[in-house]
Every structure is written in structure tokens, then in C-alpha cells.
Image (cartoon, rainbow, N blue to C red; front, side, top):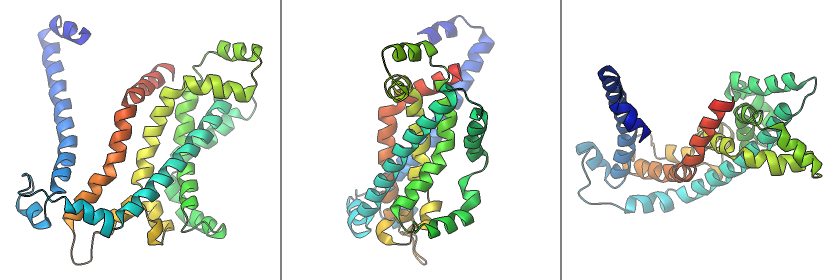
Length: 285
């Protein structure tokens, strides 16, 4: 309603600019959403029909593409692996990231800036740049071709951005709340658990969405560290449909449609808090 009133009382030049940006945003939304919808529709076609009529509805809706992918393609196993690895990795990213962010934002000590910059260096220097020493280290620890190894890598990959986002938000939490909690007899752990974490939920949601998508979609690290078929994740499972002489596009589109469902569900339930987290970070950062 406020935007409507502003639009009515604005100058013609501002109205034209407003309409232009609205058209631009709608065009961008269509450009992003249309390929996803077309992928989902194509998952019910045959490979031949995908090439003959790429943008039309299927003549016959082939639900067996999903059955083939889930059962014959072993996609159920890949799906469970991805769920397990992503969920455990995100748990430790949020746990360790929030603890580190609490330490660098709520306490004063000599090495605080050094510790903070050490975490930020993980954003400047991506983990993929150190793939050779990382592979040698994982080999010495006997963590190659294990789900635990991937969980540790994804946890390390998500910590720098988590500390950066959460520390900026936690700095804005009033100290008076901490003092009041100490008067009531809370120790440092109780303050972190009962005061800092509940107030940081919008930014934690932002961190979750920011990190969960790269972990879920990551192809590089599972390709390097996983060799057993029983431990593959969804991106590796999708890649298995690309044959040397033939590509099963109907199976690929069905597999991709299954892959994006968890991320869509998570965003639908967390989008409200995601927007709150972005707004809070912009105001308090």
C-alpha cells in the first residue's frame, strides 16, 4: 500500500523508472523460473520427444521416468547420501560457526582480530585451491572414500562465511541482555544458548540457505574423494546418466527434478526468515 501511494504521488519520470525496473525484475524472474518449469515438464517425455518438441507439453506423461531413476538408477541411495551429508555438515557449520562468531563478536581479547581475519581468509582463499594437500591429508587420516571425510570438508568450507555473517549480526545484540542474564545466574554457555542463539535465528536462517545449496549441489569434492558407488551423492548420480555414446535426457531431467525438490521445500519454509536475516544484517552490519 505504501509503495502504491508513493507511485501515485511521484513524478512521471519516476513512474517510468519504476515501471522499467518492475518489467526488468519480472523478466529476470521469468528467465530464472522458465528453465526450471521446462525441465520438470521434460522429465515426463522421452528423449526423442525432448528434441522434437522441447517447449511443448508431453503427448503422454511418462511417470516411469521417475521410477526408472529412483529404482534402476540407484537414485534413492544417492538421495539418502546427500541428505545425510548435507544435514550433518550444516549442523556442524551452524554449531561451530555460531560458537566462533560468538567468540569474536561478544568477547574482548588481544588475538580477537587475528582469529577473525583467520576465518575470513577462508573466503579469500577457497578450499578448492588447496585440493592437493587436502587430498594428501585426507589420505593420511584414512578419510578418503568416506562420508565423514566429505562432512568435514563441507563443514570447513562453510565456516568462513558463517562466522562473517553471524559475527556481524551478534555484534548488534545489546550487551544489557547479557548483563541481565549474568545477574540471573547464567554462565557463558547459558548466555550463548538462551540469549544469543534465539536472537540470531534470522541470521542463522540466512546462513543455512547460503551454505546448504552449495553443499547440496557440490560435484567437485564428491568426485575427488568418493570412489564407491554406494557413497555417491546426487550430483555424481546425475552425472552417471551421461554415457559415452548416449545421453539419457529423460532420466537426467527426472533426476534433476528430484534433486531440486528439497531445496525448494527448504526455501519455501525459510524464505520469510531469510529476508529478515538479510534485512537485519544490512541494518546492524
